[in-house]
Length: 237
Image (cartoon, rainbow, N blue to C red; front, side):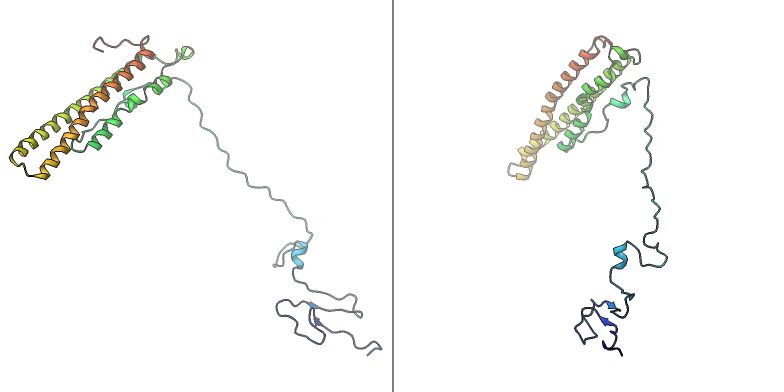
């Protein structure tokens, strides 16, 4: 024992004098004093302060780190562009879909007509993309393109007209039958309701003939403006 008293022993940092327990969860073991100038200290977060890693096998603090270049995205090679004759406007591309029309459901009947009128709705776009300008006239045969478009339009218009007239004929026959039954049973409200429903459907189907006439006239007008110098339709049109 020296004159200055006993050498300080280990104590918990943050603890009151004479208390060796300290605060649970925040203790830090500290060793040293005046009698041990080269003492050691274990502090929480030491490895994080120097950028090291406390796991086994980790690199020592301050060691040189090998820089890994970032992984680049795979290179996408665009597909080569096709140079040459533009695809002609054939029946397989512009022909209207064919199918049996359901005359009982007017919504289905109207949807079928809408799909079959796609060729008329897209005629301006198709002519702009298929009929060449003066600088590309040698690469595409405009006469053949206009002929194929003419045949596609004729097929679509003929098919739609046949479907509309066929459904009008069937619905007219149903209305006639219901009227005859109505004369025999005046008090049948269900029969009267069915008769009115069929009469309304018949009027809507007849109005589709007027719509068809407007659509056809517009298509032939556009066709004649672009194809009159490349193709001459038969005299019937």
